[in-house]
Length: 372
View 1 (cartoon, rainbow, N blue to C red):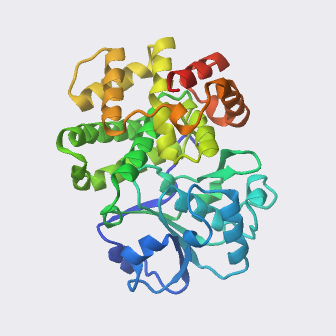
View 2: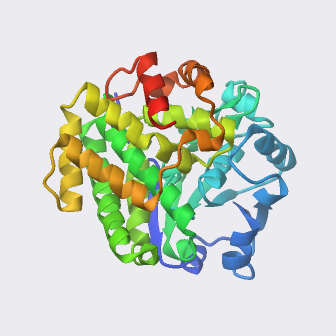
């Protein structure tokens, strides 16, 4: 039984032109990206075909957008497809590589062989999803009214490419909501019962990097983020490597449904549930891997707190950078919380079974109420 896997080869470049030259990007290749990224980084620099997500609809990846693109590219001769963008772009790019696919439903319901007939290169422009090194695509499946992740072993990229230049103008919110998602990946996977010592190495390093640099950003201002872009890119990829070997838990389970219903970006959604879930873990089972997480937090922050104190310090750190916003401000009604939880239990079992400890329906309702 395989316990640990790194799918793609990983490359680092300072600039996009270095990548273009080394990978011999040509007219046989297709880049899937957004128009603003094309205008800023690619225009007049590369001779290849382009597909722009803007032409199909922006926002989180949905089956409606994906189906339109699959229809348009069906039958085209594409040698390699290169995804350049945030998590939405990269998740969609993976699905565009499936041979003979004409709809998201075909892929998610296993109605066709899930094999790849194109080369696949993934280049992130945020520092959070880590999906450049995973084989999972998370899609808003409209008929189910929730987000669902699909793992397709064939969809590990041939190459994951980290290019510092592509983050040289990343807005504060995009930076924070993507990097906090990388932190959450690492935290959830580190304490997951399906974790392993190999994953632990990558999770620990990602947690240390992000918390340590968050502390410096609190002290010195968000403009300092540009000094640490390569570190945040690596931390995101470290978390992604762990994510490619197991799945997250209740934070993502709760966040994926909430984000789908209220059209909230993924990183923002996970940030809203992080401390609610981990505080519940501390309340119910203050032992084991939580103690190790506490020690990592203390080391990164330069403090010597007990278990509750270290998680409180983490909460205060994150709230300083990403001010707490109650769920009611997104339109969640208190009387509907049980319905939200029922939907999470129905649609996110794949994640809920990977919690640090088993959480009952009442526990999940309590978490919702605590962040309401």
